[in-house]
Image (tube, rainbow, N blue to C red; front, side, top):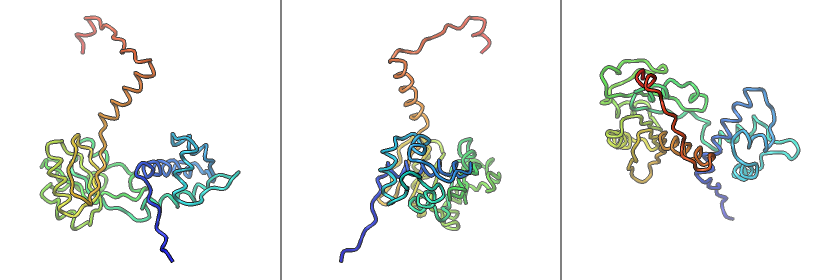
Length: 230
């Protein structure tokens, strides 16, 4: 008798499942009990056929003519995405972006908790952000060991991101979310997700230009008197 194996979910599908989970959380907050595939797909920005294919990795979920149970599907997605237990995270780089991420309460509701904040600037050390005290970068290894952090978030300048990544990996962190504008090199067994806001804005600029038929943007001359006030 062969042992059944869990289906491997493609990474692109995992990303969409996380979006569905976010949408379902909003529906639950609005008191919605059931949602159709069309409604869920529209809210998530995908087509219904694609949504049904993504959810097929979870096994049977919906009921024809009724749709999906919001609470039931949330539970299935949470379990599939590993959100049933809290994931301790450390964040390195408490600039404006890092501080905003550390202070965002929405991560906790999805099972992510910042248990360590670190920065190289002595003026930032000791600050309280999101209920956590900023520690010096020299404490990185001890913070990871003490908190058993599973995820490292990097919001440092590009020139130091790789060295921070190397230290996180050496300390035992195997999942890294990188906001620094540089590609990181990691050994096998370590997962890196990169968030490049400038690239996303460039893509939006391209799509906006395509909507305009590829026409170059119109330049409006600024009167000299107004230009002098800038």
